[in-house]
Amino acid sequence: MRKVRNKHQLLKTKCRKRINGKQQTICRNTGLYIIFVNHLLFAIAVSISLLSFAACGTAKGNTTNTTANKKSETAMLTAVNPKTKDEAADLHQKLMAQENAILSENSKLWEKVFASADKGMAMNEDGKNYGDFLLKTIDGIKDQFSADELKLLNKGAEEIKEIEGKLTLLEQKFPGCGEKPSDGDMSVPAENGKPIEKDDLKKFPTFDGKDLDGNEVKSSTLFAKNTVTVVNFWFTTCNPCVEELADLEALNKQLAKKGGAVVGINSFTLDGDKTAISDAKNILAKKGVTYKNIWFDSKSKAGEFTSGLYSYPTTYVVDKNGNIVGEPIVGAITSEKQSEKLQKLIDQAIANSKN
Image (cartoon, rainbow, N blue to C red; front, side, top):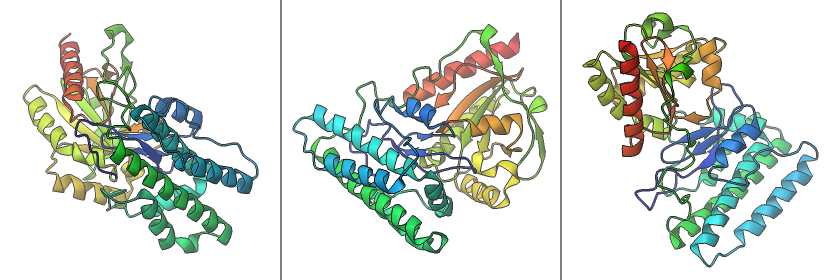
């Protein structure tokens, strides 16, 4: 991940990766991972808050011609030299949209690449070109692809490397050009963390699952015993997810005094994946997390709900009656504004539980 030169910049989005066997593209950033699940058009609508004209999907047909067109578009974009910050911001968005399109072009192949990436390492290190990360990963699993497939992937990775290089130059010359003009919260839906009327409350999907130690956990009893339950969806290689674990642990201790709790759901661990559970437990231990983390069947109502999430981390607040309170907190809760939104939902949930 490129360094964020403006310390107030919360999000810097780039789409990539997959999770939990679903066709997904992760948007890499400093505070949020947006995931395009199944419906690319829906994904575009979400990411368009940052990329107002982005087209993540491409038409099926002649892959060679489409790839050639993508390369031509990339060459044209990287050749542009903006003179003002506004022009740089516009180019920045177009380059990111172009990168999304490259990854969406041969999504099945890219899924293999990301599925094979080392889960123990960050998706990208500060100061390193993401294209180099992709090229290295592809080279490590090249025996899994045909010659033609390998050619397509390497071309895509080279283009992404070119795009990343241009993005870095833009950010160096025009600091903050990757930010969307706002109060600092980018790529987060306008309804993020918004309270809703009690009559509009919806139930959190039911499940019969287990915690990471194998103890049974049922939604019917989990929520009923707490005045409020903060449900945090995360996954192991999501840097913003991991970075907020300490804050969630502190929140769990605060909620315990009010009869509430934090519960984590790592999407990699669904269906009881033993390797994923081991990885998640290692990270939780390193971060000093003591609150319960659970998994359930991916085909359950809660599993389908999890698969439908478009961003990570995402945090829901649930009252004693199992009702989802307000809109989810999309992105890390570590910023002051996100924390304030979360606290309002927690207060509402506790109030609901008293009625």
